[in-house]
Length: 404
Image: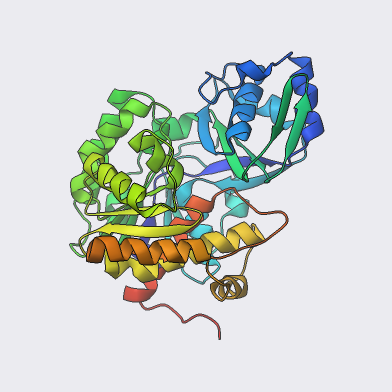
């Protein structure tokens, strides 16, 4: 069934580093970094800039993705820590999550190397536009709630667990599409689009969007097109993607940080009145057929027919929560165990209230209570997408049932 679910448009090789406050504190001293410098918006042209950026994210307890001027900066910083080499990118992580449930797919890649060949699930097919092997690692730094850094006048304790991605990845920045994509899409039941956020050149972006829409002409009329948003390296380019694709997207998905960036302010995710206003503003900015927003307390679909996605929202929450709890290599049994956890009472109250306030135009599902000492914060949005699409597949495609 690999051809029924097609996930694009690019994968990555990731360096996941183990958090070590003593190393960070040493770098603060080495580079004479002061508290007044900490910001998440600095251009990252050196290792010093990367540390300033990382501490800015930690101070706010938020995650994000940032471009670095050179992969050498990634290599330099990563060499100071214990690291794990894994695969990333929304389509690849989604595919790996789905594989745990025995659901197969075809992934579109723009780069390939021995790490990808070794780590991609054997039941996952792929097509690739790469003409040679390349490795441009993404640095992923995650910190736990309560992680503490103290050096000079800097004294930070992370209020929430999160992750930051630093990258310089030419193949994903170019995002060349495989000539095979159009043929593969002819049998697709679900097509996931992601990855345009890395492109930094408007002319390149416009050409890739035109090419993608040409490939998409072969999609069956009943196919569901799912778009997963992400932090754009050049924020102004995100509007070009929406202008080009909104008419062919069925489900437009984003996380709480991206939602807050679009509305331009922090939000109380449990305040129903505030969220109704914000979701109205979000829909005005992104007039998609159905908006999906996934957060740590709840996930919801907003738009006509939102209720049809209840099972998919639940599948996304369960898959992301399983990764948060278990990390890489989780099993179907882990997924089932998480599905029986109690739901977050604050999320449940919010879900009931917003559905009462808005009616059938919203469907909201609360998150689970997941208490774990060392959570995995990397790839939760990607894994949510995999769980969402897996549930779509189970509702409309012949797949084996979950283990009893």
